Amino acid sequence: MSVLDRPRDATAPLPPGQPAGRGRRRLRLWVAAVLVLVLGGWLLSPYAVRVAPPEVALDADAGLMVEGYGPAGTFALDYRFGEQVLVTVPVANDSPVPLRVESVELVEPAYPLMEPRPDGAVVEPFTLLPGQSGEVDLSFEFTNCRYYHERANNAYEQVRVSGSVLGRQVTRTVDLAVPLVVHSQVILNGPDRTLVRGDDRRL
Image (cartoon, rainbow, N blue to C red; front, top):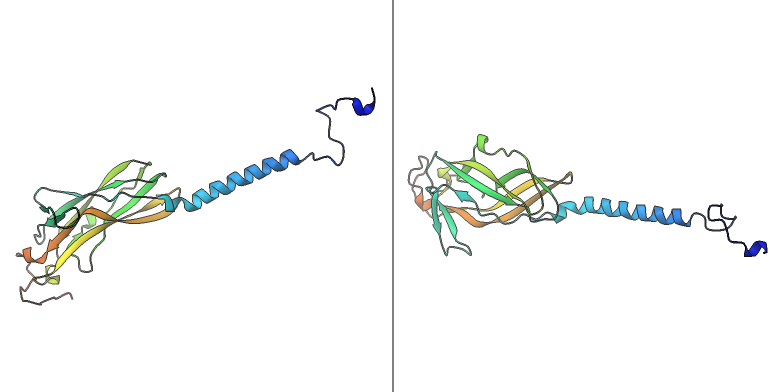
């Protein structure tokens, strides 16, 4: 048997000039591709966050649900100057990534008739896995009755959820399923309201 006919020993090193590093190069390419995918997923993770439109819950005596006023109705708040109202906001994570919720707040109109109470605006951070939901209680006080004349309305239509996903900051502003509205016509006990037509004292 000639030297050329002998089977090569698989454990022996390849002769010079043969592609000994082809397997290692292929492995390095796979590792690089995986790292690129992981890095890309981390960079794009905030864009994957989806929060479902919440339908807030309030006490039974906080106001009146008005069916047919808007696409899904409207909750008309009973404005009582100086009193508190508790708003429970559900937060549902509709995204494929875990969401750490750090802040939840109602988006205020330009001249709000409700102010967040310092002891009711702090959210204890919590994590929602994909498909999970939680609740946040927000406490407000009716105030600023001087802002509104007899025809003005004050609407809370959105909620802002802030937090992080995979260590990256993210904020989502979503519409409330049912908006909250204060009609100035029902402000009867505001000590700073003048009841003068066209009066609009916002200073």
